[in-house]
Structure formats: C-alpha cells, structure tokens
Image (cartoon, rainbow, N blue to C red):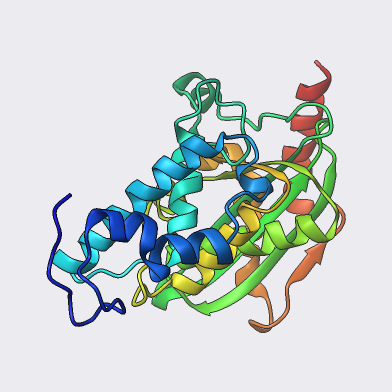
Length: 276
C-alpha cells in the first residue's frame, strides 16, 4: 500500500497509508466503530461485511477529499452516507427510508394516493412570497383519507428550500410525538430530497443544522419513506403552507386538528376515492 506525507492539518502523527486510514487511525475507523456503534438498529438489515467494506471506502474517500480538496467530513456525516448507500443498493427495495420519485402514471393522475394498512401519509410544503417571507405547512392522513392533524407556521425570511426543510422537520417531530411508526412522506421538491439523502453537509454548509436534525429523525427506529411528487398531489399541504403567511408571529406552530374549510372539498374527494 502506498503512503503519503502527513498533512499538517491532520491530527495523526504518523504517515497516512491506506492501512492507517481504514484500520489504525483513531480519528477515522476507531472513532466510527467505537463512538457511533454502526451495529445499531439502523444497520440491522445488512451484514457486517457490507457495512465494514463500505465504511472503509467512505473513510478513504473522505480522507482524500480532505487532503486534495480541503473538504472535511465528520463521522456523523459518514454514517449518513453509509446508511444511504446501503439502502440504495438493496436488491428488493423493501427497506425503510427509501427515496423514490413517483412514476409518470401517478403524476398524471394529479390526485392524492392513500397509503395501505396502518401506514400514514404525511404531505408537506413550503411557500415563499415577495421579499422572501416564508411559511410552511403539512397534513397527516390515514389509509382512508381521514384527517389526523394539520399544521402551518410562519418562518420569516427564508428561502423556499429552507421552508421545505422546516416543514419536514416539524411534521416528522409531530409524527414522532403522536407515536406513528410507518410513514410515507411526500414533498414536491426534488432538490430537497437530494439535499437530505445525497449531499454532504460540510462544516460551512449554511443549512447544516436543520439537515442534520432531519436526518436524525429519518434514521430513527421507525419506517419512514420519503417520496417526491407533484404539487397537485399534495394540494392540502400547499394550502396550509400558504395559510402560514397569515400567522401572527414566527414562534408558534399552529395545529389544525380538524379539516379547514379550504381543504374540505379536497379531503372529501380523496375519501370517496379511497372507498371506490
């Protein structure tokens, strides 16, 4: 194995060979393996051999990025990458936290699609008006189309990406508080999906904190599948996000336990479709 001269910004005192990075480096593999315990439930569907080999590859590529591009990826970010790659490489795609785009037929239907069994459907959306005044909203519904809970919130000055991210974080937090275990989460921003599941959040990433919070929620011990869809399919969430602009302040999350007037026709239509 080849070795390289030590980078002054690194914490190791020895030359950094491939073997050093994947086996001996306390900042790398030992830190990953002992402090973050990759054998927890989030990895229970995969054999250790796959986790180990992928972990070695991520450690090595991260070290190379740090050396040649000046990009530093912390251990927590490596865990997200490892989990994402494992999930995306699964053969049958029967695992939690799948990232999917609705096929053309479902998008052309322009209608809400109910979940099955005990699964709940969460739709979220963000809204930004002139001068970057942002708000977000969302709704939880069951397999029969029944309204379980809605919300909206004013966010102040935010971009549309930030508004979408806040909608996801607030909705997942609420779902956890309600004790929900099987969730299909829909949003209409493919950019946000890519940010959450593919982008690396370096130390200077402007949205690092909220992305980290959402990832912590996504990878907890429950079944969450994140889907991209068209805005027509999440019309109630779009309505609530726009209602968020009418909130009096940016502190409170406004809970909507019953169907608001602006969503009644849409919800009734969806419920009738579920019965047919």
